[in-house]
Length: 344
Image 1 (cartoon, rainbow, N blue to C red):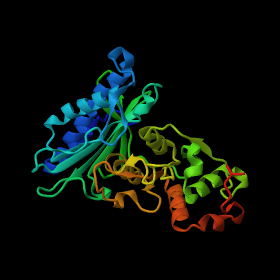
Image 2 (tube, rainbow, N blue to C red):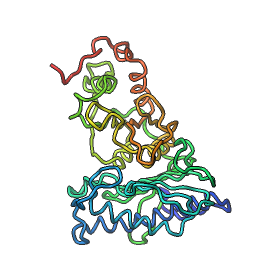
Image 3 (tube, one colour):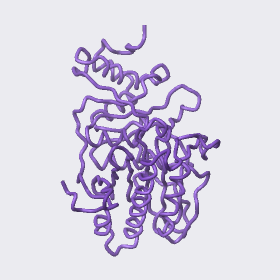
Image 4 (cartoon, helix red, strand yellow):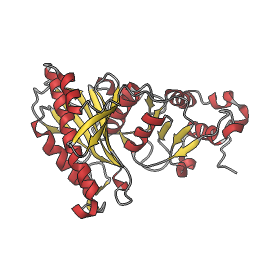
């Protein structure tokens, strides 16, 4: 345990006197402060007027807004007012907001990931990405590998903040009595051999063949080419899935599929896939869209969608191989080539 180290002390040490790092530290501290307020709001739930009900509108990308989506975005914007940023992009806004164009960073965030879980009292979270900014350049058009820092907050039984400042991944848990985050895990590394995967299996018939091949091999268990039994998980909350992978290993798949509106995936590249990929890679894992590394992709719009496959590096590499070499699954075991276990 390293719970004597607070998040503020950690960001303060990181910042030193460097202007860019000072701006990054200020942004992380602002998200931490906002998340404490959001956590309290979630904890009170209906007592604070938060029910998980739709607001009757949609966000900039067409998703139905919940009451807490709006409140969380407002809380974060207030917290970020004192932070020097060149541009600010939120899932809840159609376009990005221009700040101080001379500021050294730009910030993108999802104020409330998994908001469909609010009504059922399940895990939700906040995701953020911090990238460098240069005066005169269009913000938010760089590759994910340019990120300086990224993090996410999980509002679960504990409220925890996962953070990378580009040198490993650390996890902090909220000390509610002191209203501060304390480090509980340092330099997290994702376990490699965990026999666990997360995917919404109800969409099997819509998936591309490489995804079916991977899932078929997992379902085959000890008798299949993997020679082991797998567990399947699905929480429908990106932050919860990522946190589980950091602690226990495994892989998460939200692939593209043949349904209308899903050809390019459903998660957002800028403020969901990019920060998660940065965190997962910093913890020894991987993140791809199926065929390409997520951090090598540059968004063409702030709400661009993308497939996301992330987790233990061995499983991510296997899924990538199945996409790049369609015959790879049959090479592993010809008995399972193109045989869907869900098919007659």
